[in-house]
Length: 316
Image: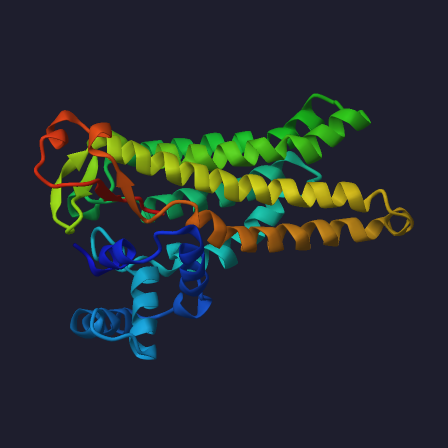
């Protein structure tokens, strides 16, 4: 078992402990760490990771957890590491949620956001049954289809307003403030479920309490996808919902009515702040080293001699 999985098995079993860990893991200073630094950290962990907890070992753990794929042991591209998720996707989320003057602008920002999210989901998937950590032709086609569909669906509010000529106050409020909330949540979950569909089709590796691999399970793969999809829906849905609620309250104040120019900056800043705060929360909703009962798995796992529940890597 990879050291990262061993760490998650022994730490972060409660939501608060995972939240504290993710706040440390998401330190943006680690995003540009070189491969030499990462390899040095991994060597240190193999020698001293379980023996002592000084500052150097702690930093090595954070670097390993944030930069190395727990299934393949390969170094994750800096663009798709967890620390890079906020600085790269936050501007895209803000730009995708603001009112646009044209459909082309809405499609452009949606495409960038959905393409990045698909790449992030794929890079941080469970890859235990992927040969040589490569992407199959079918999965590549599904990723392209996911980005294309999500781009069009994400721009749907803008398309409704401009193409159908529905400019009444009620319709505009619905398309600007209400529709993006469930749409953002559904598209985020949809991206995870399609991009990582190989995990439910082919299964993922399952471990016993001692960290020994005991087989490959499609049921565990489905559970990992569902949990990650829910966490991503919570992230993007909350990011769309909270600023809309704050703006609705702000517009009722006399100050905002006298200074309407303040609405746009407040919307953009609040969206970025909520998104940044929700990232570690959403990553912490479910354990990285998930637990599943043997009776919920395929028949071959129910006859195992190992006691207790079985475990799997959820991915991110």
